[in-house]
Length: 335
Length: 155
Image 1 (cartoon, rainbow over the protein chains, first blue to last red):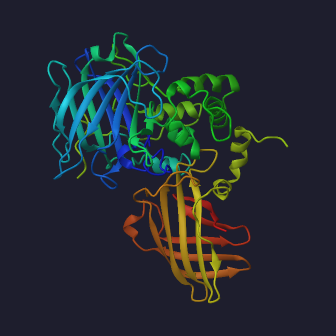
Image 2: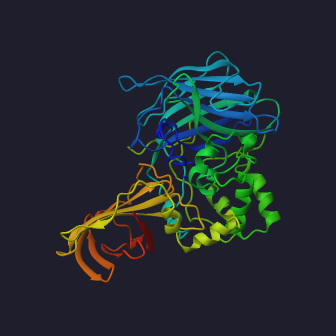
Image 3: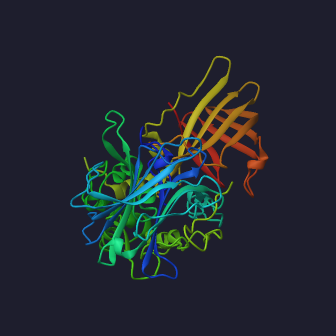
């Protein structure tokens, strides 16, 4: 539930686990400080609800290179329809030149990877990028790397150290790239989103899901506000209105006061760290969360501590042991 | 009238997630007892309880013959807040409860039952289940992961 099932009440087309983002990871490639690994996982509980990527969707990793929470670079992943059990992926990089509105895809795209086969079995099929881009790519069925005592959370933070996700799978998209493709400034912001055709206007895309840091939308937003948050661009997230009419920033502040016992000033300060919901990452550093996010980072312990003001130290669950030592790093699926 | 801000709401919501579910648009059928004494119900509770935001919803659906003391109750946990519940069930949390006894006291009905598939049970979870249907308050009290949750009956 880093971002798993965070928009389940959305009506079609977004009520679709194929475009339901579970996690975003960004970390320096182990042993090579000149390269970065970006991972976008979707499809919680796969393959229970879907066994493919959605072919009419765009999966996107957005990069803010100047700290204004407006994307400057987009990595886009598109998939062919699944046929005879096979799907192919295409990856592009676009230099953006303005605000990304809901469903608006712009920028000049250049191909990074062409016709990369999606992995549906245990073998991780890695495809090299076109020409001299220096890119490696993987997309397919994988073990869900996220770890959390979900049932302990549902029981009201009565954690038992039982990892709900230990045997779950996702569909992963992993991109290994030279840092030069992320811009010149090493301090960047990252988030991911999925875009799908609108039901009544299939030639127009709309945003289905979005995520920066883990467990922000799932934990801090309620009901219909989750859906609003999923389609609100990071640059607008502090001032966007919730269903109650207050801003998300006000609501986060009040949540932190209620859950953590913070005073108004402290809560406001933390809420301004959490919003905009962007994963900050210094690609010149190998440190983990809050600098990017590695597969083994115990983000839930960090966030439980933060949200409850240290009253809850963690959920007693640690990282999985099935991560691969090399690209795509995501463990083999539980088949 | 003083407007209820979110902080007040979170405090007030400590009374139970039932209060949240009661205001929701969850598509619930009516609960009723028909002429032949058959109790049919559907009830929901958000989990975790307030002040934590409800990430999922436990839904109870049952049909019980009050005269014979038999029937079936199913318990499922669906992803999503009670006012925004999905069709995605969280695995390992579905229970089918065979009702083996009923005690009625005024408008309160106590249902005793057994979980049918014991392989689903979590460590320490009993296969014996008791649910209390309080028709006056419109609530069902039922176990969930070691705690007693109040579920709002559909009206």
